[in-house]
Amino acid sequence: MNYGEIKNCDIANGIGVRVTLFVSGCTNHCEYCFQPQTWDFAYGQPFTAETEESILEMLKPSHINGLTLLGGEPFEPANQRELLPFLRRVRERFPDKTVWAYSGFTLEELTAEGNYANCEATVPMLELVDVLVDGRFVEALKDISLQFRGSANQRLIDLVKTRESGEIVLWRDGRS
Ligand code: SF4
Image 1: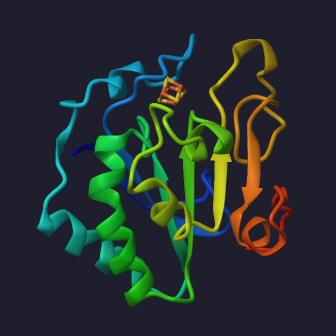
Image 2: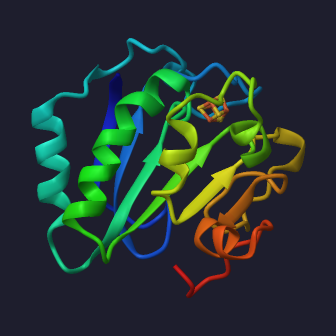
């Protein structure tokens, strides 16, 4: 897996101050995507053991609320397989911090067996995520007033509450 960028002080992609990892590769190809250069799986630089250590260091300060996964597409199957062991390390090291993840795939697409985005790593990876921002960017539904998302079709799903209740619960500010 490659990544394009890491932000160590991001306030735009999830609640609080976060470390954000922009992984490379996306097959969704949304029209008017704001970063089409990240569609290329070879974009950026390799995600190495050193990269992991560097992110873990960035997560240490108490003012950092957690980690956000963005892309590109973190839920491309090839990326899921690399992110799953890393997320396990993040959870083990920082059990009190939150994990947000963005995906152009909807939760239903991610969890439907036989679907392109669903692989053996998907459910275990989703279990390590607190909030999933799902759905492709749709220019016709673009709304700059929306919190943490670009278009109105995209949902902020509280995966903690969703797991507890067994039905999709949307995230509300102040809960994760
Ligand atoms: S899912 Fe994200 S990175 Fe992929 S094409 Fe859509 S907006 Fe661009």
